[in-house]
Amino acid sequence: MRDFLSLFTESAKEFTKVRSLVTTSLLVAVSMVIEMFSVDIGFAKLNFAFLAIAIIGMLFGPCMGLMAGFACDIVGCLAHPSGGFLPAYVLVGGLQGLVYGLFLYHKVKGHSIQFVNNKTEKSTDITLYLRAILARLTDVIVINLLIQTKLNLHYGFIPQEAYGVAIVARVAKNVIELAIDLPLLFILLPVALKAYQHIFCRSAAPKIAN
Image (cartoon, rainbow, N blue to C red; front, side, top):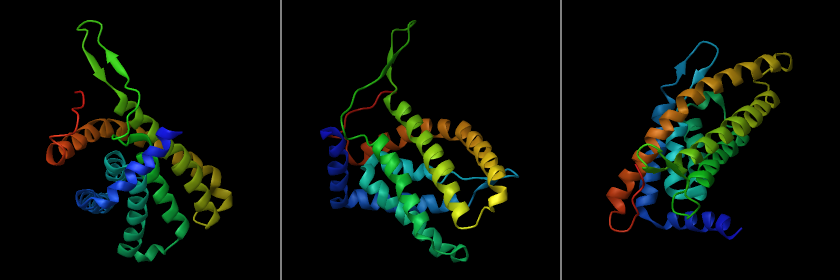
């Protein structure tokens, strides 16, 4: 319980650091740009704006991730007001940032999971990759499939008679997304963490395994 609470206490401290606030603002802006370039696959649109939110959660934890999720949804509504403003979707956006912060926040010490190559006997820390898988699965299953689909039905974006079809389409969409999302997370998260440490924390931050 103490380790879990430390996620929030350490993350809350990020609000007092200018570099954290500036980096988060830049990543929120990046998320908005990515949002504009969704990929249409016929029955659904693939969107990778979550990548910026995942990086925010990894660097600054659940509190900052929550606020960044709120900001992305609110700024998105201001940029595209035709869709209307629905507070429930703002909460969902915040929940997405919270999830990535809970799973990925790197400052809180935890158990390291090592993969050992039997041939070379070289060990690789795969903790971040496993956490990325759990974070994305939680986002996809709990937030995208369960919560958002129910909200779409509640607000009439999905007719009751088309609910089953919508579920099938969203499952297919998210399965395709996962096949693309996970490799992108595996590449971008370590790169973003190393870049942030190199710029801001070179003297104090521990090195992460390759």
